[in-house]
Image (cartoon, rainbow, N blue to C red; front, side):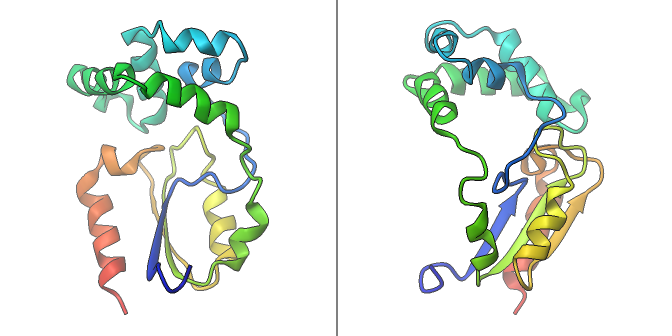
Length: 163
C-alpha cells in the first residue's frame, strides 16, 4: 500500500469492533435477516430522516432539503439493495489486527458527538497507527464532513499540505 497511498484520512472509522450508543433505525432494520429485504422495496422518508438525525451531532442542522437528498439517494436504483448487502457482509473489526501495521501518514478525524461509533476509538486508532494525527470536533457527530464541511476540509487540507 505505501507505494500507492501517500497519506490516509480516516473519518469516524469502523476498524475495531464497537458498540454503538444509538444505532439509526434504518441501520438496525438492515441488519435483521428477512426483514431487511423489505427495505429494498419499502423505505419511508421518516425512516431516512430519523437515521440522518441520529448521525448528526446537532440534529437541528438536519433540514428538509438534506433529508430529501438522503431519501433520493436511498431510493435510487440499486442503493437499497446495496445497503442490505453491506450490513449482511459487515464483520466490524474483522481486520482490526491490521490497523497497527499501517505505515502511512494518517489523519484521524472524529466528531465527539458520534453516537454510532464511540469517540473513544479515536485514541485507539491514534495509539495503533504510529505517527498519526487526530482532529476531534467537539460539536459534531458521525458525519463531520457534512455537518461542518469548512472545518473538516480545512483540517484535511492542512494535513495534506504538511510534510
